[in-house]
Image (cartoon, rainbow, N blue to C red; front, side):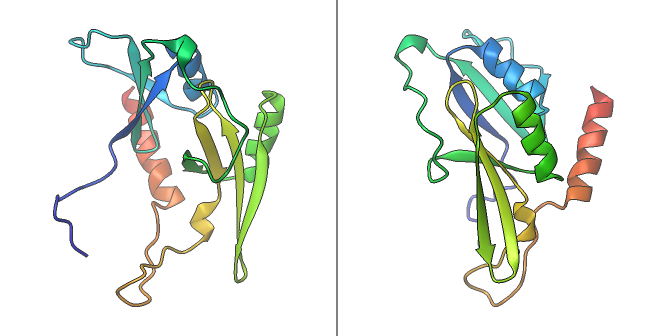
Length: 165
C-alpha cells in the first residue's frame, strides 16, 4: 500500500464545544480520557485530553448560543467510534448515567458487531462497539486480513500512559 504523505497514525480530533467544562467532564468521566498539558501560547479557551492512543482537543465555541442543535441519534451521522471489552457493561453504565442511546447490530456471515450510539454534551455522536469482531480486509491486494489495535496491546499502552500521569 502506498503512503505518499508518510502518515504514521491518527493524532487527535478537535471538537468545538458549547462548554469546555461540561465536555471535559464527559470525556473524562464517561469515556475515560485524562487531561494533558496544552500549549500556553493559545489565546482561546480549550482543553486537551488523551487515552487509547488518541488525543481529543476541546475548543470553546466563540458563539455557543448559535451552535447547531443536538439532533436525534442517527448511526449514519458523523461519529467517533471506540471499541470496548463489554457491551453489557457499557449499556449498564449509560443507563446508570441516564444517557439516551440506541443499539444496533451489524451482521456479516456468522460475525456480529454490536453498537451503541449516544451524544456528547455538544451533540457529537459517539459509538461504542465490539467492532474488532469484524476482520479488516482490504478491497485490493488479496484476502490478507488486517487486525485493528488488539485489546491487549491497547490496554498495555493505556496502562503505561496512566502510570506516567
